[in-house]
Image 1 (cartoon, rainbow, N blue to C red):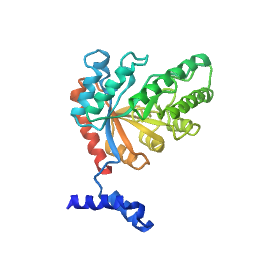
Image 2: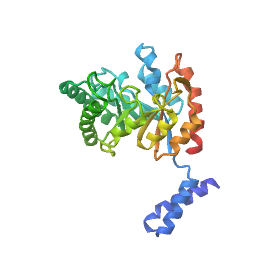
Image 3: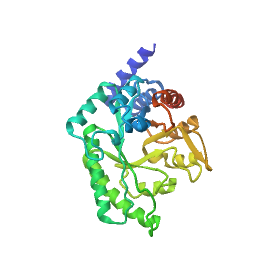
Image 4: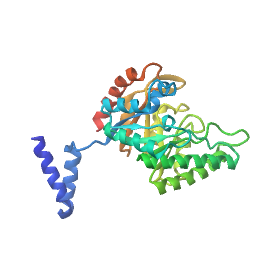
Length: 304
């Protein structure tokens, strides 16, 4: 019965160019209610979850890719720190080997990310940071990563206001975003409880940049100034990627993330796509991650 419904739906999709508006509306309603062809949300894992073992060289990025593939995740967030030669860019041969391995593991790349800091008052220093970001936009494009995750600044520079520093950071961002557009890569700022501590500050940036090629990586664990869930809800429509974490800090108290509440917020936004997860708990990620990912998946399922 289900296969017959799917077959009829597919047949109607092929006939769409010949349908009148009423027929089209009925087909889209049926697709929304009855299709299992795809999902609105797809589960990804941020490689930073293996930060300890990776930096201690107890595991390789290739083994992390295999781990994600063995769990049948949809994607991996291929954090740049763990690629060969970082912060220098890897060779094309290496990048294409990693890209090939990810594909053969049954995964997509939901994004990548780097460490940068546009908080220096010296324009020459910020220009070097800008060149660094652009070099990794090239890497993202070669990997086929749709999004590159970057930071604003580590802190408000001494002797300068937040607004003053924000303006020069936005100027540097604008150049990176224009380059990202040229290379087909969305540039996304992560809120990291450093220069960006509130939803309003994050939105301030999005309102001044090209929304087609700039957005937010919403770090669910790093809105710690006001109520975290309210802050996440404020920025959800600006998200182009996520970092769903195990813990959230509310009024100075760190507690487990209410995943059903979080997923309801995400589902109530206009976001579609990958939901990258990240764990920071001490211990073996191979032991910690599967139960956490199961909890995330269970919270997502009602909104698939």
